[in-house]
Amino acid sequence: MKQLIALPILLGLAGFAHAQDKGGCPQLPTAEFAWQQRAYGNTLLCRALRADGSEAFGLSITPEAPYDLKRANRRNTGSVGGQSVYWYEGQLATKPGALVRETMFELSNGSNAHVWIQSDSEAQLTQDMGVIQGLRFDNAQLSSK
Image 1: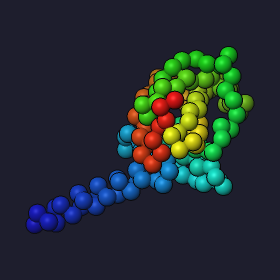
Image 2 (image 1 turned 45 degrees about the horizontal axis):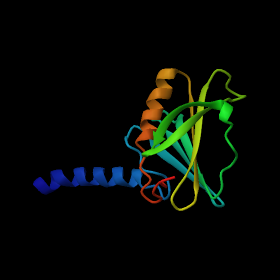
Image 3 (image 1 turned 90 degrees about the vertical axis):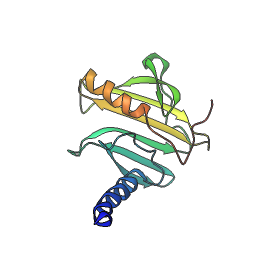
Image 4 (image 1 turned 45 degrees about the vertical axis):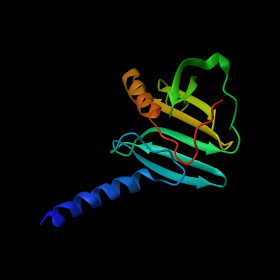
């Protein structure tokens, strides 16, 4: 009987581990989100989706930084997976009033990570930044730069 009880638990844990292992996407610190992963050539796109299907935040891993962030848009410091970063303010033409933040940093394998958040409130922005802070880049450890 103990084996029958343990089987659903093990299957559940295996499903959780599978949901966390998405090729090149970093490990999420919470089961509240799930990755939607797509590869476009040499770019990996990871979107953290809420249970309702909306995007909480996203990240891309590319060989080169997609563009330069403007120092004038720098808003605050933070961290992503233990790496110190600057968060920059952005805008969405299709969603005026949205709170947009983005950052970029280099991974130890030379790839570049670009992380963005689009929130409707300061509270949601703070909550999403907290989740991003806990990301774990197991397959590509963060650089010490």
